[in-house]
Length: 275
Image (tube, rainbow, N blue to C red; front, side):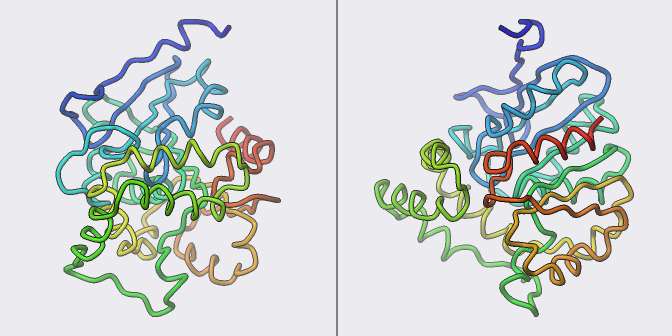
């Protein structure tokens, strides 16, 4: 059994209480250096459990679960920018300076945005299978809409029957995670998510373009991508073209959840970069 002191967990918000920030935070470990772990869309902070445990001896770890995801209470209208600001406000108010930020998927996009907009708060970022503008991979001439009308998506998702929503998640997940043992767990996180938050944040994220913004990122940046992206390496290089310190590496196997599908490779990259 690990040292209880390292496993002691403080929660800034619990289920049933109003969140002070647009996310729930669990703090573990000890150390002057901080690591903030941000999960991806609709996922719980538990997605980082195995990775985080390796750093709790020498780091104070802050693991987030976004409001409205995986059973955490929803909080107002959900936007990408509002959640980014919430993370920055939390870091400032808790005096967490120069943290390493590790983010998967949408969490990786938040890591890039934070490094660009709040450089004084960030020492390094690890971006796990996230791109500055995912929509541009589907539409070459993509431009963000302002305003962006999400009403159709919100209505479609919120009106779905629970069993249909669950079936949709189970159908999509084999395209995202090769480790079949994890599919049910990730599906449950989605089902426990607030439907309106789910739709609003997905719609807003798909309208987010960080390609110009990341020119302001000055800190070391490790970009870990699933193998399929290497087939379109030219497009990937274009996405990160303005990020001066981007170190792009491709996993040897697996899908979107690299931390599960290529665990040994992932942990090796993460450890080398953090240490």
